[in-house]
Image (cartoon, rainbow, N blue to C red; front, side, top):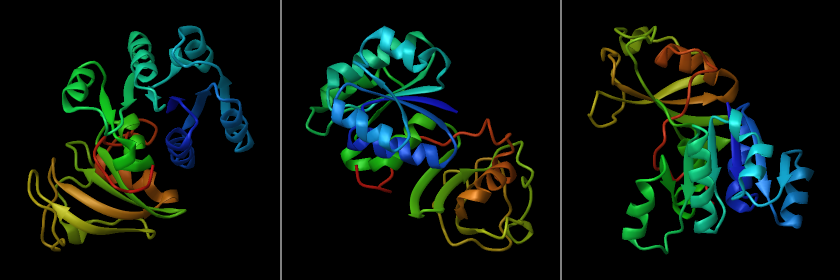
Length: 235
């Protein structure tokens, strides 16, 4: 997937790193020279300019982006970015600091696809919001290990299987299971899998696509991660 991230500060750069590790295409937009140089030193594509300007967003590839993350510390810039990105049909994610009052949050939440509090959610939370969908990253355990929560779909190859019949790749293991709208629990081998059920899986990044195909049933390039609150990393 293609993402444009506005802001190459702490939140934006960490989010970009997480997305790049999963093979996504990232373009950063930043107007602070030092932050531009830092991101470029990490071999990111960076557009030097004000992300609230439509011409800059077009240069960054907003016309082909799947989602735009406005992750600067400036609420006005973030909101303007999202309004422009919405015009181009992108999923829009806006950073808002916890210092803002609840009524301000509600006002902006109606205008964008998702509002995130990076101070609380961390880079994984911002990544989840950008991706949207039926899979939720819970935590990065190590450079190549991630815990994800997946929701079984009607098209999943394992729909109707029991836990004992589930054959995941060698570098993946089930940690918890929950029926639709039920609590997550230690899985029983006799539990059957149905659409809407959830599995929490620990997996190596190299086998995540295979795990997703089994449990979600979509093509790996079309699978996206569910937005949701998580405390998987610091902002």
